[in-house]
Structures are given as C-alpha cells and as structure tokens.
Amino acid sequence: MMTERLLVSVVDDDASVRESLPDLIRIFGYRVRTFSSADEFLDSEWVSRTNCLILDVAMPGMSGPELEEELIRRGDRIPIVFITAHKDENDRIPLMQNGAVACLFKPFSDVALQETLDRVFA
Image (cartoon, rainbow, N blue to C red; front, side, top):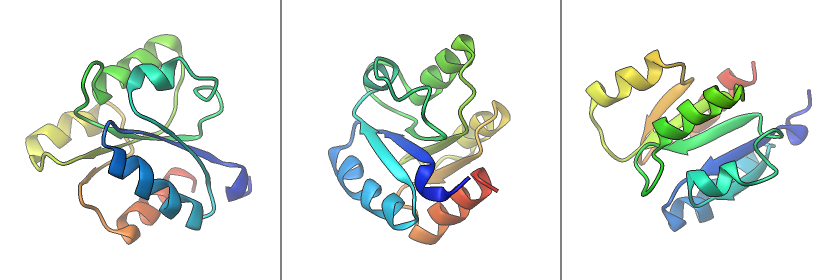
C-alpha cells in the first residue's frame, strides 16, 4: 500500500494540534483528516476509511480511551496512537495494555511521530 493512500485521522480538542499536526503528517506522505471530538469522528464518513487514529487521551465529552472502547464495540479495529499532555507513566501503561500502538507525550518530536507511524504501517 502506498503511503499517500493511507489515511491518518487526528482527534484532538486542541485547535493548535489540529492545525499543526496535519502538515507534519502530510510531509510524511499520508492523507490526513482532523476532528475536534470523538463524537465528530464517530459521526463522520471517515471511520471506516481511517488506517491509523492519532487520539488525544483527555477531551471534553468522550475521552480517547472511551472512543477506543466504542470503536472496539462497533468492530472497527483501527491502530491507535494516543497523545497526551499528562506525562504519567501509570496512565500510559493501561493504554498500551488495551492495544494502543503507542502513547506519545506532548510535545513529541517529529522523529518520534514518524517512527511510530512507520511501526503502524510496517
């Protein structure tokens, strides 16, 4: 599969993340869509087209882990990369145990994100 055909969806309530992250993801060669909430993503046509989900842990309304549970309940198995500003390793462990590909602490480096996406699509 060619990278430009792969879609990475970003769900984060922080507008600055939704503005900056897509440019970086496009530089890596992927298509990208952004969503300001879990509900916006779930209500979109993009759920079934998403090849990787970059998902904020803490958001108003449905949290990132709650969105992950809902996707699993629906049978949508999308590789998830959690991102969080809360730098607590104890919070990261259950996310990884529940099947996340990675959990990156904000601010993360371009290299860390690229290595993570390379792992997702290896």
